[in-house]
Image 1 (cartoon, rainbow, N blue to C red):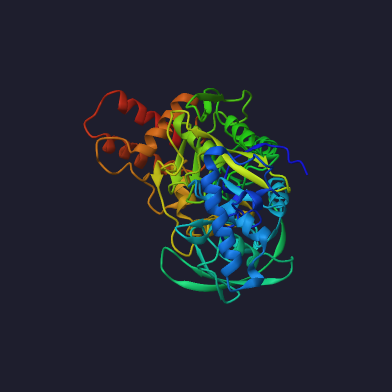
Image 2 (tube, rainbow, N blue to C red):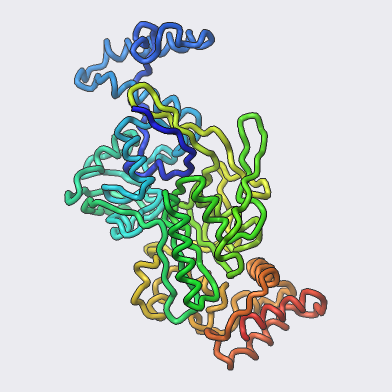
Amino acid sequence: MTIRPWRVLGVLGAVLAILMLGLLGGVLIDRVVLFHIAPPGGIPAEAVSEFRLMGEAWNTVHQAYVDREALDSQHLTYGAIAGMVDALGDTGHSRFLSPQMVEEQHSALQGEYEGIGAYIETKDGHVVIMAPMDGSPAQRAGLRPGNVVLKVDGQNVVNLGLDDVRGRILGPAGTQVTLTILDSGTGNTRDVTLERAKITVDNVTWTKLPGTSIAHVRISAFSKGSVQDLKDALTEIQAQEVTGLVLDLRSNPGGLLNEAVGVASQFLARGNVLLVKDAEGKTTPLPVQSGGLAVDIPIVVLVDRGTASAAEIVTGALQDAKRATVVGEATFGTGTVLREFPLSDGSVLLLAIQEWLTPDGRVIWHQGLAPDVSVALPVGVAPLVPLAERGLTIEQVRDSGDAQLLRALELLGCIASFQNNPIIPGFGSHTGRLPNEWSVLLSIWLKTKVKFPNTQLAATNKVSYDKNCSASLGSQRSHNELLHRRWCGACCG
């Protein structure tokens, strides 16, 4: 079977249906043993001693290991290859895929998946939930990024490899599996019983938040077709008299590079989306594609620990261009471009061949992106998504506890609807300077000349806003005052 190479980003490969095997046994070595996967002379001259060492381990395992039924040569070979890739340190990104996992990877990138609907990975020696898929059994059960999987159907999996855990969790749609989950934030454990299902991933969903003129746009993954799905959504949004947009990239594990570039280009008029650095250190910019549909509308981007790879590309591009305020938690930190290297039996090595940087040259790999406004989601609170918001009242949105979404709405000028205090948060600090997140929004407004209609803020609140604007400036009567007053005019009409 020939697998066509493509460039793919993200921890999307860490989805339950796309998990690499852990190092389960000795590593194949000896030239004689290796003839079935490498022709004579295929072992590099400088690596003969290393292969000989692996051969010693292989032979010792087969001669001495007590559980003879466990001595499956293919299982050990795959485990050895996976361990070799894992030793590179690009955890959750560069990885080995068995033929079955290759098929599952391709299906997931097409937006189809069967299982509990969760992306998982190995972190600090534990198998953890990276992100639940929208509308999946995992999301409905309240699984969240960072949850540690301790048991599967009552069996301890703490010391098992990722593929073993994956194999225990997977099963036909309609069957059940019980996970024992540790909440890393609280230290509490709980049992969660989920019914496996066939899941179709919607790349893009959106709704107009009740009682506001703000669109909540959710991109769950950068699978094939994400750009067109976003264009369709933005076309609908333009007909709805929307004055601001919340771009929700929380628990988005990434996906295809070209989709990330296309999505970012919908919000940027010029510049670069990212920089790509190759193994020789050469840096190549990937420019914004012309014709974006939403290059003017004010944006707040939501991120969390499950925001990775392609989602980080979009976040970094908008953040560097000061096109959006980023709200939430530090992102995952995936910063390499993958390429498929097919092996002779249909398995694949997914290896990082390039590193990507933000347009300003910031490193994301293993570091992640820090938000402009840090807001953690309260323990026990699930993030709201557009599909769940349809039919809700403004009070139900406010009472949801989704602090990240509510903060985004505050920043987009909807605080009169969501707070008892009509004063804009941060404007009453009397610090004599504008808070950072508002400075970002000011730059957006001044650049795009967007004028917010006075639909969300009661006219009687205008005096309060104007007074607060003056108070926060203190004695400054310079260009900053002009900017500040212009922003108040934009918010209050």
